[in-house]
Image 1 (cartoon, rainbow, N blue to C red):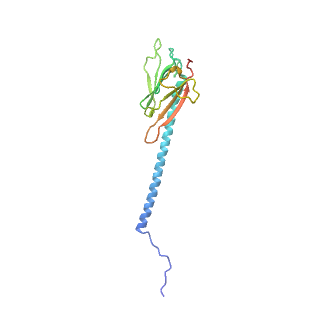
Image 2: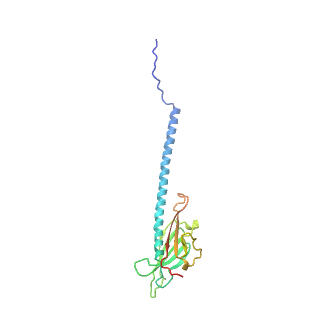
Length: 206
């Protein structure tokens, strides 16, 4: 009588099964790697936006500080010289002496610049050279058709529209600064907007 082998027969993977298993494993690995890379890219975008936002706020603080200090020039000129959409000029004491400097903020392409003229001579005048520094880059207000500076009169309570250009300097009591920043258009769908406002405390009443 022949002995019957009741042990289960062992058989290995076929070439087809092995190929399918390897293919599935490769797809899973590629998906995981893609998710990791995409997550890192998204984290970098968020970090860049936060950095840009912080840089923008520091720039706004510079402008706001000067606007708040605006006062009559050292030779009697009105505190607010120019109230344009992309240029603001005021007199303010921005250093340690007692004289008021002529301070200009303006947008040159995508660069926000600050220029300062110290009064000098006898009699005093503001005819000296303007000392210029770049305080912000990647400012896209021009291309977005968004004014950099907005102006409000003494009737502003928080809901009224800004004064219409051309603005009469003597009507201005508050200045709003709005920066549209976009370092890389491919990384973010829309520019990052930061804004602040300041009252011009030392303006004379009409």
